[in-house]
Amino acid sequence: MRLISAKLLRRKIEKRQDGQIRKSSPNPPPPPRLPPPLPHSAARPPPSKYTPATRLLSSPPPRSSRPPHPPRPPSAALPAGGSSERGAATMGVHLSTPKTEKCFEDGEGGRVRYGLASMQGWRTTMEDAHAALPELDEHTSFFGVFDGHGGKSVSKFCAKYLHVQVLTYEAKSPGDLATAVKKAYFRIDEMMKGHRGWRELNELGDKGQKFAGMLEGMIWSPKGGDSGRPWDGWSEEGPHSDFEGPTCGSTACVAIIRNDQLVVANAGDSRCVISRKGQAHDLSRDHKPDLATERERIKEAGGFVVAGRVNGSLNLTRAIGDMELKTNEHLPADRQIVSAEPEVKTVQLSDDDEFIVLACDGIWYDFFFAVIIYIFYFDFRVQTHLTIPNMLGFFLMLMI
Image (tube, rainbow, N blue to C red; front, side, top):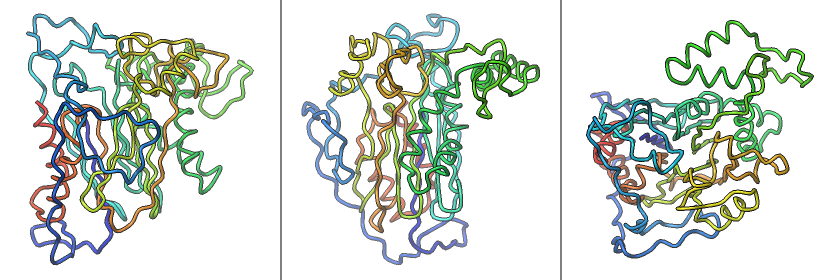
């Protein structure tokens, strides 16, 4: 489980004597009154198109549609090895007691202050990753949450390289940040193929895999060799040149702030929410098999949906990685059974926008959007004794 919150700094920042940061506003307004929640039986209709950025989320998803907490078996019942979300049969692999140690990080750039927290919880391995770069360049901040499944290598690969590819493509078409982000998502899938992709993924994986990847890196140099393919500065020849890419995968939800523009790109079921005048507004939607457009693409690519899972295994319709579900050579990358194509939303920021929250799906299953925004808003505007990471850690503990 992983959360990132980035606070948008619009006014002058001043340091108090105790070292904490506080806005210079002398009389902060009281927190907003939240609308009463709807009963759990009230179903939330699935969005037929991209949810507008200005729509207020005033009802939680129905209790029946929210996955229950996983069973917590005794340690003797746990099989050896890590957990996986590749199929329903492996979803029950959990620790007998949760790992509640939390990792915190915070920082500040020219226009944002951020904090993040992560905790492994009941899972047998930590498969999530993040990127927090408040000063990606002079005018840009980059934040991303990557929720891995089937392993941690793809999520870590995204955290390491996605922002680099965004800058690369944006440099080729200056000013078109949304298109650059889309191209960067597809490029990550391509980079994970071949010998170089195999080696990088292994270096980012478990200890045994990491040693193998480092050893291959010392033996094989990054060059095109005699394959006849154009060398792009990334490819290298070696014994794994025919590697088709990883079978594990990851969601990718990123928020890019450039001047007064916010670009949010999402593939999977991690989410991004913005606080505007203390109200929660969603900037992404979950990519699940129950969406009509996603189901149609899956069927056209030769796949199927059973028990809410793509080909009976994956409960996401968009993700980076999962290359065994992207093998139709007659279709482009955005029309495969599972696609890495992100849905991109661009928002013009104003003084009404206070902060954004990015988090993996588990956070949103347990908390209603407006509740998260309300607590953050109250602390940002009224109190200052809690740091952003402490608030995020508070949410993680409530989930145990």
